[in-house]
Image 1: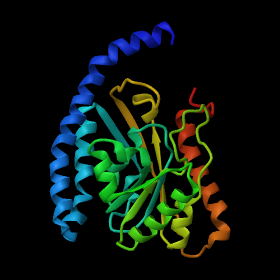
Image 2: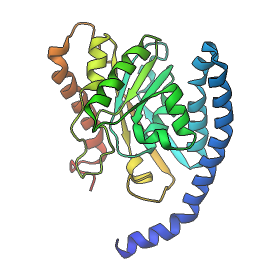
Image 3: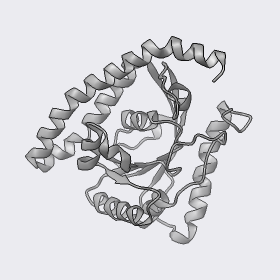
Length: 255
């Protein structure tokens, strides 16, 4: 770590501490509400519970000083069951996705979150976890997502899997999201997140205020394609995300 980075760490420490307190208070409020809803086993309440995390996400981002600029968001279809995919540079991506996606949605997240306070409870009862390095668990998560799609839920999935910490703008895409879209004939919507990695670096301890740009895209229809065109769907999606990223990183690299 160079001198500049050390100075930045010192300067942003109080703000990071504030962000931790904000997040802790939000989780302390959310937890008893979620426990009561889950304990009720009321299907109507469980459905509406999916719209609580987005409210908390928007409040947390506001208090964290994270401003979101959404481009082309008029193409969003809140009442359409959809598979949403995005690039993945930071833990902030999931919070941003929750804040902006208006649909009744579930999220695919890494299994480690199950051990986290509050978020683990929400993951267990509302969303789907996966251990990406475990082939059997990946298959289990796919089957679980197929079942939850039957409830009419949309899904948000980061096909890169883990956060991209390399200089490359995008990593290898896993097939799951694209397979789900094709098998279930659901539209696939690419979302590009820009600057989340600078605000909350994956391996950093500091969280800074800043602006996140979110690029919405027209749904890619899958009703007329089958699994033989899965790779082409991936290429089309990757090209769409790359086009947005190159506007902000013309060198083709993050650093």
